[in-house]
Image 1 (cartoon, one colour):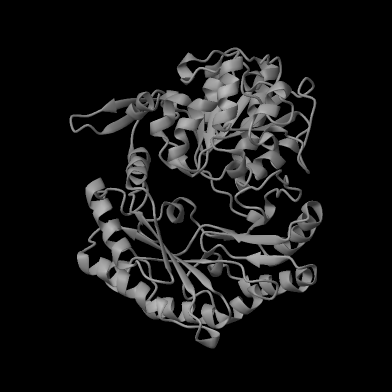
Image 2 (cartoon, one colour):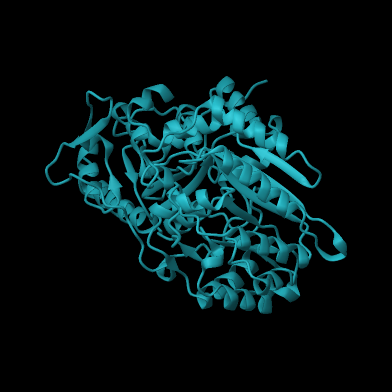
Length: 512
């Protein structure tokens, strides 16, 4: 087989639609006329990355500038990866099919530690050196943002700059600085990085030297006296942020095939294990009027039949009932349903359930996290067993047939009594019946607690693989009952995630 271009490869891959780049609402610009060529990279498959709301936002913001052309690139599936390697073709962006090594900046969205290997896959397939210190001024600048950057050290050596916090305004500032640098001097990379370091929220790893002390703990010391720490970037007013009212409608079946509306950022609850609840503070909400107007324009531009209201705890959004009433009034006749993916027992009221089911019953997940009230108090998950039971009762009574429950094992101070309480709680919920004495189905998902940086539990230990397997097997055996489906996260996966969540720069070489 002779391969001279990307078009020659597409007939031989499983899902060529992943690589076409011609979806509805894509933005195509002439790269030769753009002053800044910016590749937005997501280190996972197209189906996952194209569902990431943050990437859609950045794509919209960057392309609003006539001097910037922003295009997308995802980690290829294994069949495409093999064909790129065997043919010598470089990894390319979707919109123009240009090799990503010809872009000026490549910006990675880092949502999950176990995607880190795909950072290197993208760089290697793009024929770009891994380490920032090895890249010349003629090669792309590699930057990153996303929740994983709250501990950037395990991947610090790969990036020229890392954005900590809300990225919408930062990426505009960084792009503006690059454009001025290019016009003025473009003498060397160091001069650009110095300018970037003055932007709030930008971490330049090469401007800090890592040291390992006698205990094996890493510390960093600044190279410049005027750049000694990095403050997280925080957007104060979500209503003033640009919003992608014409999001790209993916080919194929993405993991989230619906219109996404971010109603709020941040969470008031302060669960002691939850990194997102800490790093996205303070709580900021969009106005219901703004959300309604955005939804009307976005539904018209996409044709979606589902709207998902995004937040760390959507039921805590201050105007949830007026917003739901407005959405139902506008969209119920068009059979557009609304889902609230992240809900807290106690906030899912019968009134809210009634609004949700007006079009069709969308799924929801309740996260008790722990089985006993004692352990829920330890982790600051301030919901009672009564609130959990009442929420499930209301859901089954109103016609829901499947409820998902999420628990963690290995939480600090957990005992065998806490695990017994978890089993007892699920068994109580299993007995709840809906109309016609019909029992609903309960899906139980269990994962091992992973201590994350910047949380109250960041210094807590993570249980061993043997202990994790033992607890999961015990729960699985005791919940092997009709009407209960039990799922769990692989303990080895949890162990790796814990390592990368709290690690330091020594892990960069391990990743390679």
